[in-house]
Length: 91
Image (tube, rainbow, N blue to C red):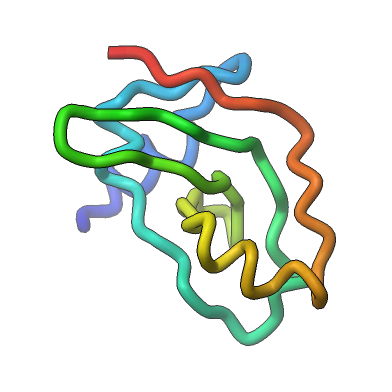
């Protein structure tokens, strides 16, 4: 992914809204050395044509990631996953 796209994606959540195109391009965060460094941005529950995005948007080292619901459930006993807001997805 180009540096330009990384910058666009890092700033893609504005006022609790993200574009569907940006959501689809976000990398999925499956593991990290320290989950405590992850900054919770918001919860996403959005049905696309072929995919259902259910999980959280998080920031790590200045980059935005999507964390799947199953990853969040697996880590619940180790980390507080109270997302500050629900993110609205627009076309």
